[in-house]
Length: 114
Length: 112
Image 1: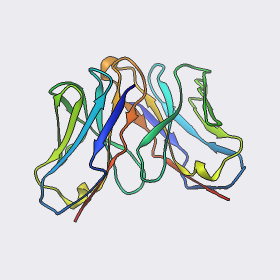
Image 2: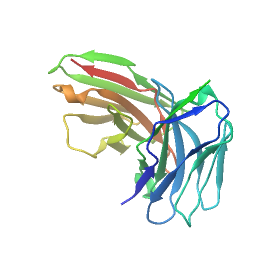
Image 3: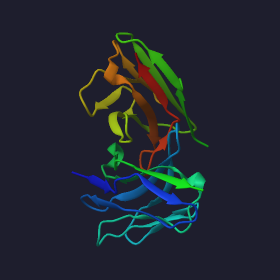
Image 4: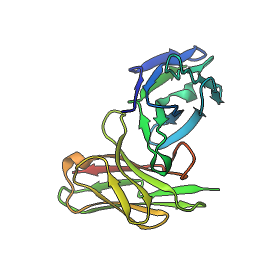
């Protein structure tokens, strides 16, 4: 079955530091890949996505590249801010037609200190 | 534009009481609908999903049930709550042939 493995947290960084959150996946075929962000007390928001190999998703300074050869979709940001403190989820979609579901990683808590 | 509404935002219920959480979607038709639970910690557990009115798939056996009485309405219910039902419940929708979910703002349920 499909699975997503992302780095265990928590991750604590100082403001303006470089961020990488690793995500690898196992899936049949060519799934779409996503990063979601959850701010404290809120639902999940789509941060970025990539639908095919070598695609780069980007939003709000965050980037992730769909690497088929390494089955990875690592999240990066060059300079984090305190407002980026949140839980980040990597996810993939299967291709089950109208019956599709997202498989989520366990989430990585990021804390950015001023 | 499409929006998803979920209520209530917070709920404190005694053990053994019933539960009804509602989720509605606006601005789209025939969406896929999902209920997730996020217990202590951060992991997301898919509870139910629905691809159409009256069509419910359950992912895990539990004390909860779901119903879809209308195309854009998804309800999570329980006849008798357990302490272990406490958590953060999230509703989500997706288009039939698109990718990714849009989540509601969640309901924080505390069973006491």
